[in-house]
Image (cartoon, rainbow, N blue to C red):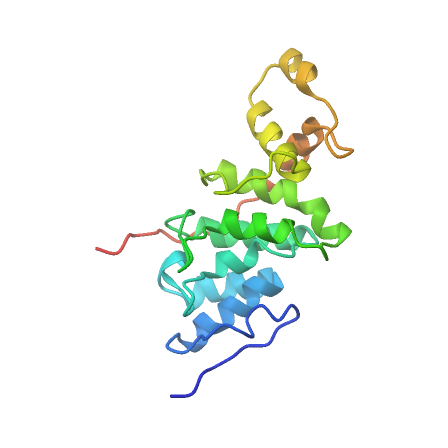
Length: 200
């Protein structure tokens, strides 16, 4: 049996054995990692007939595990939301027991994290939490990106007075700025969504 390896911009898929997946499922992994929204939407609309969390590589990773990493622009968040909206279980685990939010946390701690990636991470956290993702398993209490996202999540539905009281800058940003952008952009964005039926 021949192992099929996909080499993409980050090389994250180069070590993943995608043998046994269909051509469309392999393409979905690649589109998810590249944050190619149009390709991801095309595949989900026309060619993928199962929830995203049921599509796994040999390491148990789903396209969602790849999509949470290396987001540098709005299309990355749109792609993530499209995949999540077509996922039956946002807390799906890979073979190491890692959920997408755990993978995001590990990615956020990498030394080569670029400024554009760092900018988007609080929004990715906020979205995953909003989708009822559980908190990352291992948390550094001094992690400012995580603290910013958690604070924004906790303050979303507070009154203006309560928000003002706790709206202290974290890593140069106020939680209110994260909340406002999220509400005005990502939360309002409605991606294509198939009816999801759990496997019996």
